Length: 254
Image (cartoon, rainbow, N blue to C red; front, side, top):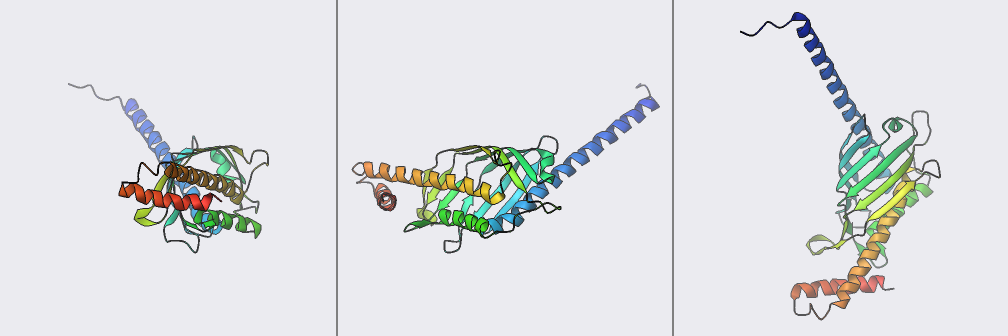
């Protein structure tokens, strides 16, 4: 026969259970709230910055550690290009100094983007990625409306560590697009010396590095294709790649 539970112990267990339950509700509530703040900020401001469709599907940030992830971030093509997305970002890990989100100086310890895809389209000396960068620069040059705090102060960012890994560019449109691996991008202490930089300055710095990486990888791919002409001459698929590579080589060889 089991001994009867001491009423005092029973009350203590109920109290502890209630405290744990309240803490869990607070934790998940704050997590949802912080994620909602980030998601709303991106979806409201980013389309103005890029002048294209931008959508962030989800964001989760721990209220205690500031660590979290963003998911389903896509950036549409600028006007004059295909209906495809220009950028589809894969796994995005972020580590933010939590309470800086509510101020005018947001400090991000690190941003790590893994397996992003850039759908690279070209016309003569222009490209969709280059036009996207141009839109960002025009936003800054025209005095575009920057996000502000309730006190009217512009929000600025510091990013201590930025990494883009395992990226690839798809050259062309549709089923014929050729995937090209991109070199990793590493940037540190963005905005530290300046005491923070605006969102357009941050986006511009990243996009310039991305564009440079795409052009470099595309040029190397073209040279590689050009150097293996004989080996792939009998292969129809290889012939198609050779033809595309020759076009790339002609475009960037100048």
